[in-house]
Every structure is written in structure tokens, then in C-alpha cells.
Image (tube, rainbow, N blue to C red; front, side):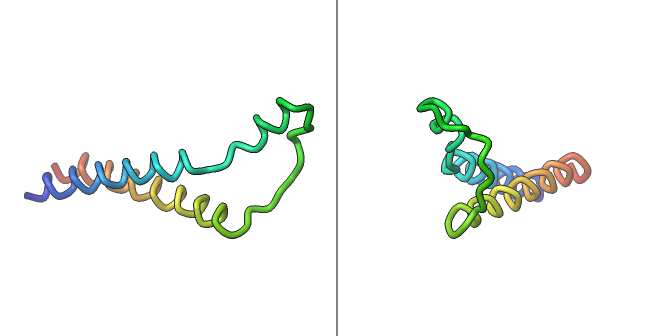
Length: 73
């Protein structure tokens, strides 16, 4: 029972992690293709900041679930 719940929750977290990573902006590659420097520092604001924090949260959840599956099952 516990193994099933942990496995399905890990699958859900992994799908959400993939989605959050794919939604992030790829500004440096596009800017350098048109002659831009690409080494410009920018601050994440609004939705970009939420995606960045969400990526960290989902990655930590994935790691914790992986260890729980390893230890408990």
C-alpha cells in the first residue's frame, strides 16, 4: 500500500518537475544567436521567479520521495 502511494506520488512529482523545467525561459541561447552578449545579469520577477522556486521545490520532493522509496520498500 505504502509502496503504491509513494510510486504514484513520485510519478506525479516527476511529471510536474518536467513541466516546470520546460516552461522556463531560454534567454541566453536566443540572445547570443542574434549577436547579443548573453552574459547579462537579470533578476527573476513574477512568473519566472515562481517557476524557479517551483523547480527547486519539485526537485527536493522528488529527491525525498526517492529516498523514502529506497528506505521504506
